[in-house]
Length: 113
Image (cartoon, rainbow, N blue to C red; front, side, top):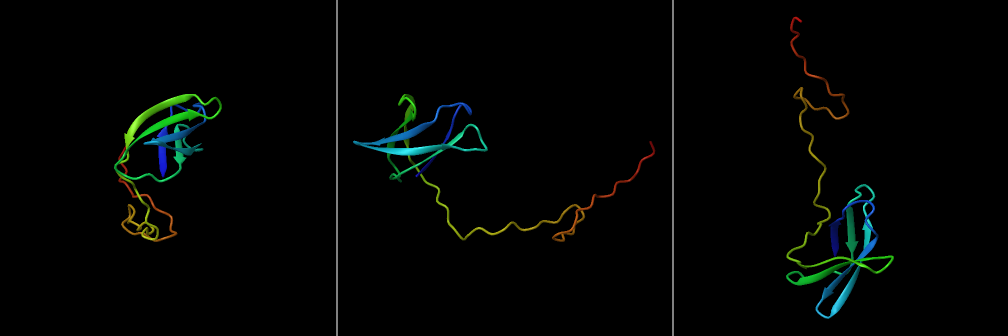
């Protein structure tokens, strides 16, 4: 399962995600997204949809609880490989699209100035 989180900034401490489901606990490894300072993603065991789980963010260095809450898993997005197609070219300002050509600017009337 993939869990996406937003933090308060690039200097937020490194952490892992612990998810409690009844009597069991699942640990998710979390990594910061290099291109977005506030984005973190955590990966771990897939959990059944339709349950409410307790989420705990715990700092790696000192095992301090940073945040917690109960969240229902109400749905999942699944990628379906092989159904994506490349984008379809659309006509440019001239009304004609030729792959590899340089776009031209439309002409405008010149006004006396």
